[in-house]
Image (tube, rainbow, N blue to C red; front, side, top):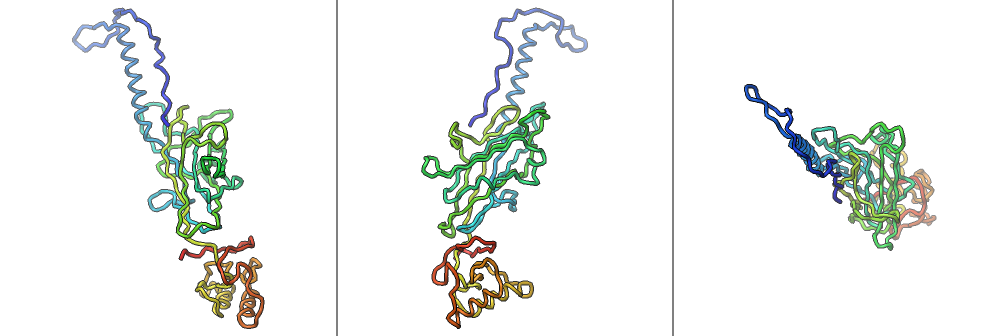
Length: 340
């Protein structure tokens, strides 16, 4: 999207009669020269145009919209997201706006507001109720007055799954001239929770990219733009993705994750419950150790395994021991097994 052009110079297009007036510059020891008023006007118009041109030429060094994890990586950029199938992950929104060092009073590196638009793999789901302005953040410190987030996850509407995030620093009087300040380091603005489909295979990457011309609201196409000096400009962008580097699919009872079911699994439950500090054992999948699926790890899980192994007791709960699956119970236990 191209930035909108400034208006005309403001000088009327009319003939100006030349009048000789003693207003010209002179140097010591030389007679005062007379310069026509029309020449002075032409010089003024030329200088103003050159200043505007210089400012517009510098605008392409534009702010950048970024998306990614809640932390920055070693290169100072938002980290790539990682998750397991069937889990959730937080997507964060950032901006940068390097100092432009332009002369004059115009400040194109100070953002009055912006709109971000992202398209994402429809195997991700966005829960709008989880959207929140990051705190602490520059947005919360400024007391941003208008924030809007919306996602549309219908794959059959012709434009896939997309989301928009808009922010305006000042939206109601009194207007104090507050803006998002220049920054070379990405500053986090907000976060939303994404759900990952349980059928996504380990090793896949679900793309999240900035996109333009998306009609999320059903009214007009939206674009990645920012506002500075009451004008709109296209922003640079840097997308991200969700790498499926682990799985939440497990076999109930395989607490030590060795692929089998032995007395060592019952011992692993005991270590997880009573001896984490001593042995440093933390199960990769707590759900696999929760043999009776009551949402907690305790001695009852050890006894369930021992009775099933040696006394023909009740087998471990779903998804069972024969095939891996997801936990059918919503509890606080975690499971993130590395991709095979």
